Image (cartoon, rainbow, N blue to C red):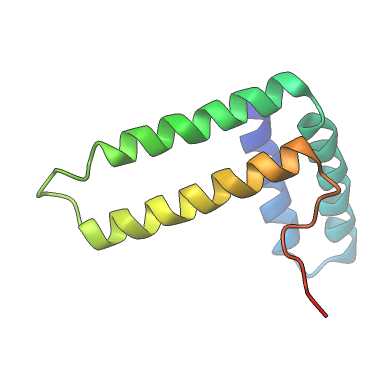
Length: 101
């Protein structure tokens, strides 16, 4: 998981630049991320981590010290991310959004 975090941090860093060469580096990192994402063990770890985070955040619902609106928004985003990840990790060619017509 640390390698993924490192690659995403580098990708975001290179993407923020106006330098075309750094954009090239960002694209190269996307290929690295794709290679890692193709590994079954990584897919499983990633989905387990999302579930772990969802479980931990659900545990905060009863806390009065937590902003419940922010918690609900975060949980909704996490659930959406989990669903999208499940689809993409099962079949990367599957579109997330289908346009009818």
